[in-house]
Length: 519
Image (cartoon, rainbow, N blue to C red; front, side, top):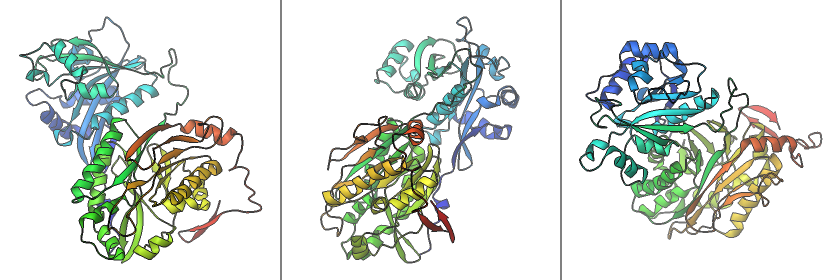
């Protein structure tokens, strides 16, 4: 079997600036999102791009326009006609844009019904927030439709409807999304868009406050590093009936991590062996190859979920057959729909004996929207040279999916992970399985206490443990990692393990693509 072409499984998902070439697709999107309402003309879009191109964004999935948003900058003044959409947006032409203003005003956001439920509005709100920070604007103001109101207008006033949405008694497709993205309702506007029959002409006046705003500064004069939020899943293996049940369990954790607005989610090594509980029992070597047959479904599922839930997912690891050779491979499913993979380099004696797994031969470091990361599968973290190589290549966090049967095996992974943090001034997250799989050879019992570890120094937790799970229970942990703190530690820490290596006495030499490198 030839290696799987990962390009066939990728979803190319990007947030990019709007261009005039998008107009036809934008018009079609508006007609789908707002049927019966007049869409913007080409002259309005041309004016927006001429006046403030930085404020117009789209989300593109596999070359198709899936969502868009438009905005302009204003100088905040309570006397402005915030209740009048035509005035505040200059009827969509935004010629009233104030380059030196202090408030970003969002005039429209659209998500194709085909792509709803994939948190694309979050990507657009995040793009607006990033623009607000970069341009040192104090806030974002939006006049938000309440398109669910027409279903309740005969039973409650618009104010009562908004109260019910705030109290989670009622779901509104627009207001609920705005609230989940940090906006606060400050008012209710009547006759905002009289033609908007779904909202009965009403709209909310909502505000997001930029906590990094510096009054008087022309633009932000320092770069604030946002913490990276990591979710580690401690996954319980149990007998299942098929792939759909496995996917449902995975989606539960991904949905939860998305609710916490995580950047990364880490699953355990070979937690996919759960699928062997729903196939005919056979010899371990043959079972491993049966498991590899699920790889296309596994790739499809995690690629879609990473995009849908706006997460970078380390999907544990999975058996893969390439050119009749069995490998243990960890995949990184980025939230932009692209995929990376890391082969397990060091194979344990039991993997070799029971399953016939073969080793990989390269340390990969992956670019993500949150910095450079590496993956080391279980046994690999017990070899310090691999983390030296990953650190040299720029990794700031090592993700370690592991699968151990006894506490001794788990402790080897844990202690080595903590040592790698000290040696290389980086973070390490480990994720393991609990539970049992009766009659699945070499995967019958499991022991884990997953966690997130830091260097051991004054600025980190006193035991160098950022967070950890309780042993042997299905759960997850969520923790923020500060990469700016890590950078300062590398430069000014109490000890300088990386800088103080005696490279005249010893060094790491490795071969990659036929070339020799030194660390």
